[in-house]
Every structure is written in structure tokens, then in C-alpha cells.
Image (cartoon, rainbow, N blue to C red; front, top):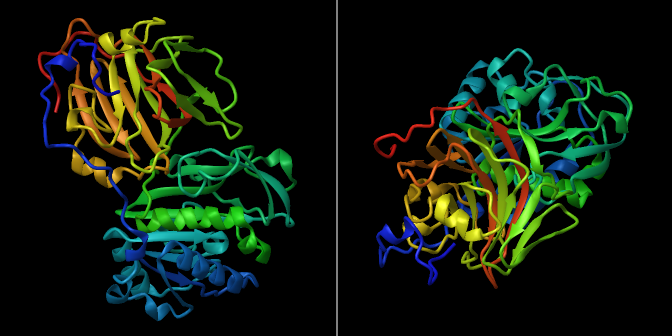
Length: 453
């Protein structure tokens, strides 16, 4: 929210830092990046490799990153790898690097390099534990090529944000020797009831991402067929994975387990609108704010100790759209009750520091350097994790902790309250997706003596 004519508790006492307006952040420009596509095979060779190489080249031309290609493992030296923002293992198979080349690649990843694994990249280097951890899982088997339904689990990552929640496509669907879910962040999984030959007992990840020993990693199990690389949705999926790996787009790739949906894109059961304005639900499972100042709040229950995650996107190119996520307020159909008795985690990249994106509105600015590095620009999706434990409130943006605040106001308490998303006013369009929560062990309710740092 922005300041209005109504004076509210706490906000009135915050200093107005004139001249400190924070401009919208932008991610690392893709045109600064160079990508190496590596497609050496020491086992089965996919006839789709030339199509994959051509597709990555075309994606680079469109998105503005340079592409080199090789099947020469001699390219894996420390000095040469420094030239690349990411290395794409395109359906590599078998033992493709010797010990010195492996060591060079390990050093490259530990210095912040990016990895993209496509399809048979999981059928590679079985005796190299570092690579197995980087890829996330090793290939075990596959049934015949056939159609299947891919369930998109992450609606914000650039590799999956543009996909339908149920993505129906044809490919060769790998089974894996282990489930990467505990170690990596699953972006999409297979519905094993939609095809025959799945062996992962109903939990079948097929695309995932992670930060691994200092680097960024993305893997997709798709890409066996030549047709995959002409498929617009698969190309978009692949481009998003590359953009994440080269640092041109930010995402929360920490493992995520134990959450339940409060809004899954279909039903708003349990939610109520307080005050003027509304949220519009679209067919792709997005809630978009309209009018206001109001609040869509989860009335079905309050929460005391929890991790709340949600995905959000500013609609306007200027980054001046305005919204926020409220926590810790009592049940009320007056939206100002949330302002006066709760806390808002702000969404507005052009206000003063204590009222800009990632701020606890009017109380504590985000760490702006970390915020700016983590923030995707207007038009792209971001993910908040808002963690409440006792009176402590912490905020992660795309997996980066940007705020840490402890309530000391006896008139407010985070230990028992509701959550809500704000519709700020005419012209402010902010969209939300995939609102989920994980309840945590209860924390002491006493107010500490000072704010945490």
C-alpha cells in the first residue's frame, strides 16, 4: 500500500526518506551471457541432438545470449569454462569427461556457473558423484514414447510459469533411480495414471532446479524426440531453464515439501473480500487485483507459526503497481483492521525504502542490495516466502532472505492472526498464484525486548 489520508498506527512514526526512492530492479541482462552446448555421447546417441542444438541457437538469437556448441571434452578447462554463464548437457550419455575435465567443471560450478541438463543428461557419468548431485537424479528406464500429462507444480519459475497446470505432450518419459524432491525443487511431475510404464509410485518429478555447491542447475526430462524442439511450449520451457541457469531470471529453487494450498488456482473457498474492489480469477489460475482499497483475506482459519509462500507479478511495465501481503491481523471485514493491527509485506518497487517491495511497510526496509539482485522485473513472476515464528517475521524473495523483523508492539501480535492479499486501487494490477502454507511448531508468544537483526 501507499500512504493515504488516513493516519495509521506505526506508519505515522516511520521516517519519510525523501530522495531515496528505489527504482525497479532488473535481472542480469541475458545479452551479457554466453552458453556452451555440450552433446558428446559415449552410449546411446539421440537422433534429436541436431534439432536440440538448432533450437538452443534459435533461442539464444531471440533472447539475446550467445551460443557455442561442441562435442569435444577438451573444452572443459578452467580458463575456457570461465567464458560461459551456463553449460548445457544436451542428451549426453555415458562417461564423457576425464578426471581433469571433471575437476575443471566442478570448479566452474563452485564459482557460480550454471548447468542445464536435457533428457539423457541424466544418463551420464554414473561414477561421478558430483555430477549425479548436480543433475539431481540418474536415469533408470523408460517405456515407449507416448502422450502423458505433466503436472506443473511451480507456477513462477521461468521454465514453467507460461505452461498450463496440466501440460499434455508426447515424449519418452524417464523413470529415475531416485526421487530428487528432497534435494531439489520440483517444477513439474508426471501424472503416472495418464500413461503406462511409470515406476515412481505416483511421485514422479520430470523437471527440477536447485542451487548446487555454488552454482545454478536446471534439468528437464523432456527432449527425446525431434518434435520436442519444434514445440513452442517445450521451447519456452527450455528457454526459461536456460535463463535461470545464466542468471537472467531469478527463482526460488530451494526444496519445497509439506505445504498445502490455500489457493490452487481453482477455488477461493475460505477467502473473503474486505472493503471495496475485488480480485478476478482467470482460467490459468491467477488472481488479479482490481480497484480498492480492499483486501482478500483467508477467513477459514488464522495461523500462529507458519511458512507462507505465494507467487506474484506486477502487470505494468513501470513497476509502479501496488499491492502487498498482510499477516497477523484479527478477523474483520474492514481492510483497515489489517493495516492497524497486522503487518504488510509490500509490493511496490518505486516507493521509499521502508515502503517498497520486500519492506515491512512503514517499519523496516528490505535489504535493498539483496532485494534488487533477487527481484524479477515487472511482467515476470516472483515468489515470496513469509515466515512467522513467534513475533519474528522473515521474508525471502525468490529464495533470498531480504528482511528480518521482530514485533515489539503490544497492540500487534504475529502469534495468532490471518493472512490476506491487497487490492490497492484503480490502476494497480498485481497478480497472485499458488498461495500455500506450511504450519510450523509453535513459538513463545512473549514480545521480545528489541527488534531482531
